[in-house]
Image (cartoon, one colour):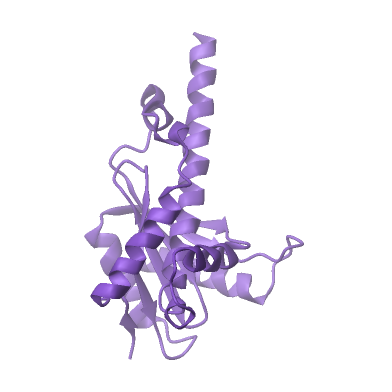
Length: 199
């Protein structure tokens, strides 16, 4: 039977708030400029994006705000067996509908030498399943060192070691989604500068 961590205890919820704040401290003011999202009508207005950290027994879930400024942790989906994915896919489909998702960003665990290992191949298979199930575009996004970064954030936020396992995938999903949003915002800024220069 699969479960999720959406209904956390009050102390755990408070810890996640602290973690979210720690992640938010790294937001650059430049990334919050309106023209980074709305330059020349090319922005991400009112488009939510779902970020996923796919593991052997878990899927961490994060979602952007409608304007694409921030990434918020939603839950961690657990499953008993690695290849039993029917309920996991069904839950992701529910979340996609609930948050009116237009794009899914899936962490892609390539090896440090940029090669594709067994974990990355399983992720590619999961991407294909997600695309078929939801009908949404699924973007593979480099997640190397994300779990290490997530663990460091949890440590700095004072989350006890015994509690990290239940939230680390959700934090990793936040980081994956944040990385993607930063990339899109930077691309929009560059496109806006080129358009204005051309004028």
